Structure formats: C-alpha cells, structure tokens
Length: 524
Image (tube, rainbow, N blue to C red; front, side, top):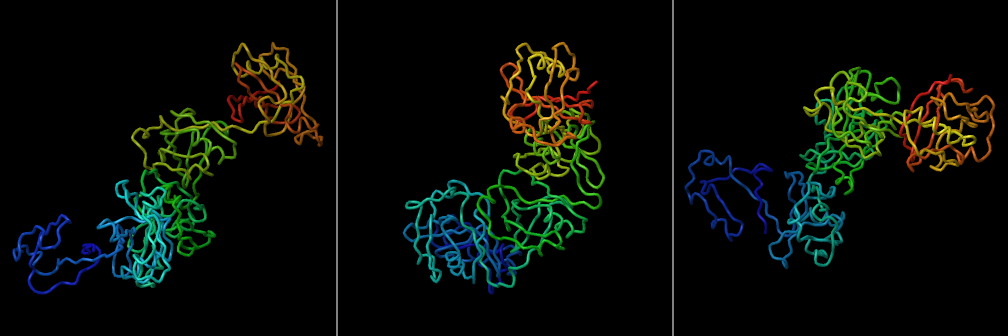
C-alpha cells in the first residue's frame, strides 16, 4: 500500500482532540509511522499546529496509482503506475501503447473515480531513464474488473515499449461529469505567445499541427483584438506542460475558441514535437512580412504590425529561414545574408533566433525566441537579417549557343574563368518557365551579353504569335547550360519589358534549381 500526502491537493477536514505529532520525517523504509523521526509524542509547540488548521491527510494507493498531476474531489490527473505483489514494492510506469479505454476505466475505478479520459503519452514531461528501468509493457482488461491486478499484465521482461521514458500512459479520472466540459483560454503574453488551455486545474497547450489563421483569428478576437496570425512557438528543449488538444477546426467566424470543434486525442508525435500553437494579435492593418530593397526579390527582412515596422535579427539566420520566407513571397527559393547586407533597417528588432525546418508555409510559422524577445546582440540594426530570393527564369534554346557566348555571359556577370565551356541539351537538367530566346550569337569580344544578338521565340506564350514550339524546346531538353571549373550551370534570362528583345532582361546562372548569380541587363 502506498500512502500519499494530499494536503497540497485538497482541503483536509480538521481533526479533534490534541495534536500529538509534528515534524515527522520518514525514510520510507519504516513499517510504522511511529517508527519515523519526529519532535516526540505530545511535544507539539508550534501555534500553527495546535489549532487543527494544518492537520495532514493521506490518500492510500493499493495496486495502482495516478501520480504527477493534480487531484481534488472531482478529478485526478497523472501518469499511471502499477505495483504487482510478485515484484515486491516496485511501482512501474505503464507504456502508453499498452493500455486503452477499458484499462483506463479499471484504473480510475480502483482509485475511486467514476470514469476515465485518456491523456496524451508523456502528458507530464519526460522521465529519467532510471525511472523506467522497469515498466509495464502491456495490460489487457475486459473493462469490468474491480482491480488492475485482475487483468493480464506484461512487464518489460516479456514485452517492449518504444521510448519508455517518454511514452508512458497518463489518465484523467473524473467523478462529476458536469465539471469536465469547460476550459479557459489565455495567452502566455498579453497579445502574443503560446495559446494556453486551462482545465481540470492544470494549464496546457495545443498541438501546432493543423493550427492556422482561422484559429489565430478566433483566438485574438476572443481577447478583443481585430484579428491574429500564427506565431511559431518559442524554441524549447523539453516539454513542461501537457497538450490538452491536438487540433481545433474553426471556420474563422466563431466568437471564441471554445465554439470550435476540437480533437482531444493527442499522438506521441505531437507531444514529442515540443511545438505548441501560438498567435500574434493585431488591431488595425494586420501583420505583413516583406523585403526592404530596391527590388521585390531581395532586401532587409521587415515585419510590419499595425503599421509599425520592425526587423529580424540575423542570429541563427539560415538557408531554411530564407527558403520559407521566399516561398511565402512567391519565389521558389532564397539565400540568407547577415550583418545588414542590404542595409540597416528601421524600428525595433522584433524577432530573433528563427528555427525553420524549411517546410513551413510562412516565416512566422517557424519557431523563434518570441516576439520582442531578442538578445542584446540584436539591439542595434547592425545585425539585421536579409535575403535574396531566386526568381523563376526562362530558358535559352541551345541553338547557336557557343563557347563565345559563354565567355560573354561570364564577362557580363563580372566573372573571369579560363575553362568555361558551353554545354547543350539541358546538361544540368530541365528548368521551369518557358524557352523565350534562341539563336544567340556572340563574337566573344562583347563586353556585355546584351550586345550579342538573339531572337525571341515567337511561338512562346509571351509572344504575340501563339503556338507550340517543337517538343524538344517545350520540354526544355535543349536549354543552354554552361560548365565552369567542371561545375554545370543553367543559364536563363527573364524579360523585364516588351517581348521583342528590345527591353531589358535578367541574366541568371543556376545550379540544381538554385540561382548562383543574377544580374539585370539592359539591351541597347
């Protein structure tokens, strides 16, 4: 039998008669409470103890216990531990893969509650390896048993549990069903941060999977703001709070998050992700992420909230962060730059420490240090983050594309190589976009590629004459490529004006779909 002090969980009714013991200290190995150290029988002198306002109480476990959570008269939460007579006094955690609703119901009835709600694996944080050196791998109950010991139990000696220190079973045991339906919502900060769900006496979070602008808008309007956007969670390395919901499915029109359909079953993957749903609320013009530069595809990264401009610190600014931002701005990819590469920004530095995995839809979806939570390193605008976004280019047919042409290409780009050579028939793979240029002719003496002659492909969709070019060109099996020091590059040009070749073009070299150099050229 396990005895647990419940003074800190529920109010204990005051006792009667004299208070006989105080300052009791046990090692846990004693056979009787009277064997433990204390001030002595009848030697209670503290006024705090003499009026029965601080009498202690206990809750006794027999074969199963629910620990690590919150307990009161209506509900109890915690991880499940089971003790078998054959194993002596060892309490063992139970693998989350090894129990279902029938087993959870038996567990809660045995600790004198009416029914069970299964919680997410690892609901109460990670355990140490030593805590799960012995565990229960599987329990099979019919559901009508009076004790968990009446069920078939498999230990770690006969079964296995994947990630046992994290994948332990957690339950919520309920007495009064009328008190388990409501929850409250709050934000970790005043108008931004993690979305916190409070129910059954414990604060928890929402899994980030499936959380989008609809849920963000509903949440922020609930707190009196005009709307909100998704803000990625602060980067943490261990979960300290439970996940109450795996997903909300709002339409965006609800007045509060409680009105949205939701999913309570939380997967181990969600728990292990250590990423919680978050929002950034606004009142007027919303939140935009943009680039401040001479062109729309490169510049200093800016975040504008309600008309106030801020920048992003380059701390941990990586290619994944740049890739997500450029895709958000409708470019295929991008390259990160640090140290205010495109100039120092204005306003406050509002974000730092982005940690994108490259799959997010928007930069603000990524984990970061949080809104206005930047390091002293970021306080000045000497370390603003910048990006260069690659643009989708249009192909150059390899017809007429010679070594002389490649020499002029690199001269135009300010690059001087000895062993360049033209490689035809899409040696570096097919590219996206149309083949707009053909019959490129250079003497090799031109200072700029636009001094060469080239024809506009009159059968492309951007030509006044509509129609199909032959299949080789349509499938980009004949795009021009260039080899430099045995490295293959695609060469593409983008028109910046009229489609007759008289306007400017953008000359770009790319490798494996990523641009290495891009330069606007003006013809004539």
